[in-house]
Structures are given as C-alpha cells and as structure tokens.
Amino acid sequence: MSKGVLFDATKCIGCRACQVACKSWNENRSEDTANRGTAENPPHLSADTWTKMRFTEIEGKDGFQWVFTKLQCMHCEHPACATACIVGAFEKTKEGAVVYDAKKCIGCRYCMVACPFGVPAFEWDRPIPYIRKCTFCFDRLKGGMAPSCATACPSGALSFGDRAELLAEAKRRIETAPARYVPHVYGEKEAGGTCWLYISSVPFESVGFPKLGPERMSVFSDPLMHAVPPVAVVVAGLMTGIYWFSKRREKIAAHEDISEEKE
Amino acid sequence: MKESRRSLTAGTMILIALASIGFFVAVYRFIYGLGAITNLSDGRPWGFWISFDLYCGVALASGGFTMAAIFYIFCRRKYHDLVRPAIMTAFLGYILVVFALLIDLGQPWRIWHAIIFWNINSPLFEVAWCVMLYSSVLALEFSPAVFERLQWKVPLRLIRRIQIPLVIGGIVLSTGHQSSLGTMLTLMHDKVHPLWFSPMLPVHFFISALSVGLAMVIFEASLSAKAFNHDVDVNVLGGLGRMVPWVLGPYLIARVIDVIFRGNFGLAFTAFPQNLLWWLEILGGVVLPIVLFSMPGVRKSKSKLFWSALIVVLGLMLNRFNVSLFILEGRPGYSYWPHWMEIAISAGLFSAALLTMQLANRYLPVYHLGPTDDAA
Ligand code: SF4
Ligand code: SF4
Ligand code: SF4
Image (cartoon, rainbow over all chains, first blue to last red):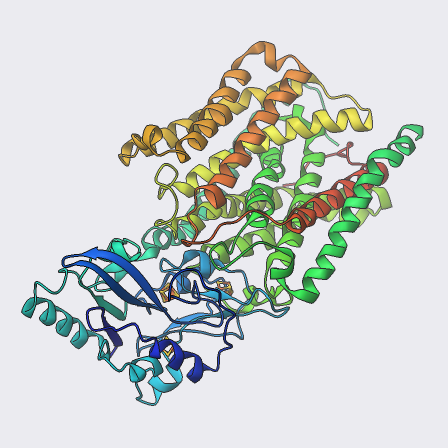
C-alpha cells in the first residue's frame, strides 16, 4: 500500500518545525542564510535542505494573508527522475517513496532537469558529488514510522498515512468546508499523481506550484523509446536495400561502359 | 612543408595555448568540484557544455554518417575525396563530445556504470550507448588511414571486408542517438517552450542533423582546402549543396506544420522574446539556406557555398542552444550565464581537436581514400 502525506495549508502556522526535523533526522548541514526581506529561508531546496517552507504573501478571500507551503520531493507515482536517470539510480518503492541509489549515480544531472517540481539537488561544491533529495524518510518508513517532518508538525498540517485514505480525507475536508478551500487536491493528478498531497485556501498557481497536466512526464518519451528497436531494424533494412539497388545499378552501368575500374 | 611550418607559428601557438588553459581548468575542476568553475546551479543544472559540446557537437559531427551513406550506400562515387576527411572530423568530434562529458559529469570515473546499470526507458541511456558504439564504428571506419600509412595489409583487408555492414551499423546508431537527443527533451514537456515542443522532436533532430551534416562537409572541405592547399572540385561541393534544400525543405514543413497543428502558431507573434529566437531560427537558419542552395549561382561558387553552409551550421547551433538552454525553462529564482572557465574548457577541447586534425592531415593519408571497393 502506497503511503503518502497530506499537507493542509490552512492548518500550517509556518513554524518550520518540519524543516528543522528534516535537517536533524538526516544530519544535513546548515546553510548560511541572508536577510532577503522575508522570513523565508534558505531561498531554495538544496543538497543540504531537503524540505523548506515557502512563505507567500497574498490577497486572499479575506484580504491580505500569509500562505505557507511545504516543499520537498513529491514522491511521484510515475517519477520523471526515475525515467530520466541514465543508470536507473531512482526506484519507486512499493511504500511510495522514490529513493536514490548513490552507488549507481554518475552525476549527469538529467534527473534534476527532468523533475517537474524542481527537487533533486546537486553537491556543487564537492569533488565527489552526489544527488540529494528528500527520501520520504525511507529508513523510518521501512520500520513503520512516520517521516520525521510529519512527526514534528505541531499544528496537524501534516498527516501521514495511506495515500488513498489521505486523498479521501482531503476531499472530505474540502467538501465539509467549501468556503475554506479551493476545490483542488494538488498531487491527486498532477504529472500522473504524487504521494504527497496538498489542499489550500488559495489556488496553487498563486503560491508558485507548477501547473501540470494529468499525464505522466514520460508520456511522450516512453513510446518514443519503445520505437527505437523497430526503427533500427527498418533503417538497417532500408540501407541494405538501397545499397543492393545502387550497387546493382552501378554494375550494370560499368558493364555497359566495359570500363573496368575494379581495384 | 614550408607552408605547414609557417602555420605552426601563429595559429598553432594560439591553439596550443587554449588547449593548455583548458587542461589546467580541468585539473582545477577535479580538485574543487563543478561549482568552482561553473555557474551551474540546482536551477540550471545543464549549461553551456550540454548545449555546445553535446547538443551542437553531436549534430555537427553528423557529416561522418551522412557522407558514408552517400558514398557507400547510395554509391555516389564523385564524393570519394570527401568521405575520409568527413569520417575523421566526425571521429574527432565524438572524441570531443566524450571528453566534454567527462568534464561535465559529476563522477566521470563512473561512466562505465552506463554499461552495467541499464535504464532502457531513459533517452540518455540510449544516447550514451549509441555514442559509445558509434565512436568505435568511426574509429574502425577511419582506421584504414592508419593501416595504409603503416602498410599493414591484413587488418586493411579485414576492414574492407566489413566496410558495408560497418557503414550501415553507423547509420543505424546515428539515427538512434541524433533523434534521441530530441527524445530527451520530450521528458521536459512542461519546460520546453510550445513553439519548439513536439512529440516529433526526435524527427526534427534527425532531419536537421542530416542537413547540417551536408553543410559541415562543405564548410570543412572549403576550409581545409585553403589550410592544406589542395583543391576541391566546386561541382562536388555544389552537388552536396543541391541536396541541402531537399533535407531542409521537409524539415521546414515538419517544424511549421507541427506548430500549427498543435495550435501554437499564434505564439510566434505573441510569445516575446522566444518568438524572436523562433523566427530567427526558421527564417535565418532554414528558409534562407533553402533559398541560397537552390540558386545555381551559389552552387557554382566556392565562396558562396562556404558562406551558405556556414549559415546552415549557425542556424543549427541556434536551434540546439534554443531547445537545450534558451527556451528550456529552469527553476524559478535562478539565472545562468556561463562562467569563463566553462567556455575555456570547451575552447580548450576544440583547440585540441583542431591540433589533432592538423597532425593527422600531415601524417596520415586523409585525402587519399585508398581503393574503396568492398567485397560485400
Ligand atoms: S518530485 Fe521530482 S525528484 Fe521527487 S519523485 Fe517526482 S520527479 Fe522525482
Ligand atoms: S545525476 Fe545521477 S541520479 Fe541523476 S540522472 Fe544522472 S546518474 Fe541518475
Ligand atoms: S520525509 Fe523525511 S526527508 Fe522528506 S522532507 Fe520529511 S523529514 Fe525530510
């Protein structure tokens, strides 16, 4: 049964306990931060920051408001990173987590370019670099524990559970309080669906979430890759045929000229 | 001989200097990591190297398989003299691509992982395999030049025996990776601008690679004729030029119909500034060369052929830079401009390739493709 996490933006108070919990569980380095005129820091996900809160100031239904959204790997149902990876370093586990095998990675960074949510990060400052991203706390997940960030959340904004149940719960919340939410569970369908789901009081584009269709990212590349072997056979056959034909024409022409140009 | 010694002083010295700078930058990169010599970031993980060395490099090296097909498969014997130089430049081109990738990869010493860890769904996996195999094919195709020089009869005879299967294999592999570079981009259908995006990208890539293959052969043959003082028949180059519109024409139709069919043609007028790049690419890089190469006057003049070929080359480079960098959306909040050391790496590799080419031209029978008859 695929696990998931539901993030309810209307319950989030922006305390960033999850951000801290993630760092401490995964023993990630802290980052040097600068005042950029917002309480949001650091500016982006990175090799050391696998989750972060985004603070958006927005005109909502009831005037000005803060909206907090948690960013991390979405643990896609059809992960683009896994399709992209040249050596198959990403695996979609049965628990739902998309995990990375550092032993395979060659550092081509195609996964980073391909991910529609801008998640995988690279260790730019290291001579032996790896890709780093949220693991869904796979080490905890395997032992039946909730992810570190979800455990740390004090306001109930993060709920961990079975994806299917969380999806039903998300819809239930929207249904019971339609004034409180926009009718959209982000992650239900986006890019083929994700294990992490979001509900919010404002449209997701307005908090910088990418607008994605319901098709998986590999919707075009999969059939194209499957076409490779037949195309190869056709090209080989065609070339052989053309060679045979033009060689024959050449021989006839040479014969007519009786000009022996061989060797 | 006097000629070549004179060229050693000026041009060659610059090339040696550039190659050395590139070498030291590469050493620096392996000590301090990619971040130290590039402006790449999590928001723009692929930059100048991928666009220039991989995307342009592979396409510009397509002269090898294009000429091999024309000469060996279509049996157009008048292009005899152009085959071996084209194969040599292609071979050097692929070596250059591979070296650039060795710099670009985070852990290049693991490049062999692509051989043991398979992901058959990854377009990059296919590109890697094809580039690897095709480089070997090119090495074999070029090896007779070395064997002739060394007067090794047996391997020479062996290669000649497998010449045609080798050429066909090369064409299949080239079709595979030239187009898969386009397939790679289809995985980012959310980020490639709709004026360029299409599930037909691999087809666009393949056809444009063919056109630039022809143009590169014209371009290089004219250049090396000047540099190494030998003659090329304008009829031969003109013959290649005549083929260009037959390739670029279908390409133009494919590109334009695609945009119209997908309902995005309006963007050509509204999507500023991407639309400027699109028009420049279509009008300057495709329509203009079609017109030029269709004019008999152009096909009869060496210098006009040269300049027209250059336009095709530049148009293709613009296309590859567009799709892999300019109109490929990065993550929000990041910007990218190549670091000078990124450019120094590419310039260094390019200079090294030119130097090698110079040496090869001096010591190997590049311009005398020996008896080519095949036993097949
Ligand atoms: S969000 Fe990105 S990194 Fe995470 S599973 Fe999806 S494609 Fe992979
Ligand atoms: S950087 Fe590593 S994990 Fe990402 S696609 Fe390349 S090999 Fe795979
Ligand atoms: S699931 Fe684990 S790794 Fe992912 S953001 Fe939460 S704490 Fe970090």
